[in-house]
Every structure is written in C-alpha cells, then in structure tokens.
Image (cartoon, rainbow, N blue to C red; front, top):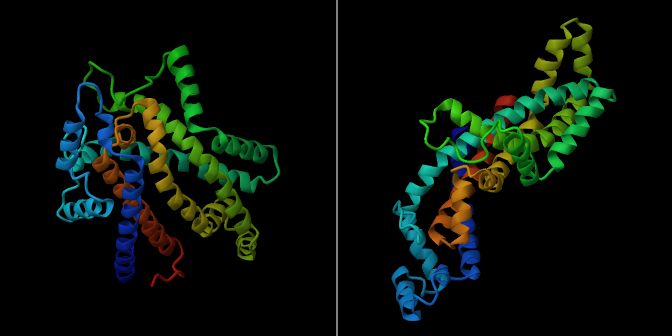
Length: 315
C-alpha cells in the first residue's frame, strides 16, 4: 500500500505541472488583468509601468516559470486586486468550503444509500418507481434554479431561513446560526448528488442480489437484514465508491455557483471574484488546489477499493 501511494504521488507531479501550464496559458489568452485598470483617470504610461512591475510584459512561458519558481519556494504569489498573499486568502476561505462539502456529501449519502437499497429490493413496485422518479428530478434540476426556488419559498415567502452568508450580521453567530445558514446550500448540493447516487446504488444492489451466494445465505436462514446490509451492500460498494470518488472533484467545482448564489464565504465566492477581476495569482492558486483535490480523490478511491474488497491488490 505504501509503495502504491508513493508511486501514485510521483505520477501525480507531472500531471499537476501539465494542468498548471494549461491553466496559465488559458489565462494569458483571456487578456491582461491590467486592462481592468484602464480608464480616464489612469494613463497608459501608468498601466505600462505596472505591467513591467508585475512581470506581465514578459512572454507567457517566462511568466509561468517565474510563478513556478515562487511556488517551489512556498510562495503562491499576491493578489493583484487586494495585495494579500494567495496562500492566506485560500486558507481563510477553505474552511467554509470544506464544511459545506463535507456536510453535503454526508447528507447525500444518508439520502441515497437507504433509498437505493429500498428501490433495489422493491424492484418494479410503486415505491421503486417513486424513488427512481425523484432521483431523476434531483439530478436534472439545475442547482442555481433549485437555489432560487428555495430562497423564494423559505426566505421570501415563509421567512424561515436566511438566504446569504454564513452567520447573521450583528450577532455572535454560533453553531446553530451557521447550521441555519447551511440548510439551503447543503440541500441543493445533496439533492443533486443523491439523485445520481441512488441510481448507481440501485443498479449495483440489483446485480448483487441476483448472485447465487445470496440465495444460499437466505436459504441458511441468516436473516433478511444481514443478507442485504452485510453481504449484499459490501459487495456493491465498489461501483458506489467509484461514483463518490468522481463526485468529490465535481462537488468542489460545483460549489462555485452555489456559494455565489448564497454568498457563502468559501473558495467559490473568492474564485468568482478573482475571475471577474482577472486576478491571475488567485486563479492559479485555486486551480492548483482543485487539481490536488482531484488527484487526492482518485488516490483515496483506490485505497477504499482495497478496504472494501481484500481481493484487490494495489501495485
């Protein structure tokens, strides 16, 4: 296991470098961030001086290697807009994003696993058709539309839940206040993931339930609960783990829109602001973090394969 992890990390290094090169090239093609400064009060000479000071007058590949050299020294650069260190900006916004991601993933699994199992063991029943229909609805409704619908219903009409931020202004906050602000964004993210997961769990369970060893277990009188939740579910975990591993990067990127809608002070809100202002260092920092999350999710998925099925050998 240790050798496998080291091998995957070493393979991931050139992948990370390739991703950063592509990201940097795309940003340079989008135009200079100093174009946002041009106006009647700022002369062209002042913009040119700023461009030289930031090194933006150099060719793309020179700018990239300067950035990479700073990164290898632990410096992710400074925001062109706020002049803050990018590492400090990411660190201050990472906590809310991880909190929202973790809770959303947990809630989606709590929704999807029981619903998927129920749908499989009640195949072609009214309950099965209901669960499948709801799963299609959950995965097909756009997140931003569901967000606006929930805000209109629970904030505008009923006044039960706050529609923005992580804590109520002018209050001490606290866990209860944060939880209240999390309800709607978590529901939006969890609904989309659960809708997809239910169908995968149902398909995996249906395939396993038809195996001979489960019929043998039933014949031995082990009990329906143990047959389904111990023998069937564990063997159905491999495709489920695959889906969850793929959804972690999607969730990390999909939060950008949801955080923007709910003004959640996470990486999504910061990323949208950086894109609007063409803040190269911040965008590169977020892209690098996203690439690391994707590679880490793939590595964790492979490790979970081995834990779920001891017959799998990681080499």
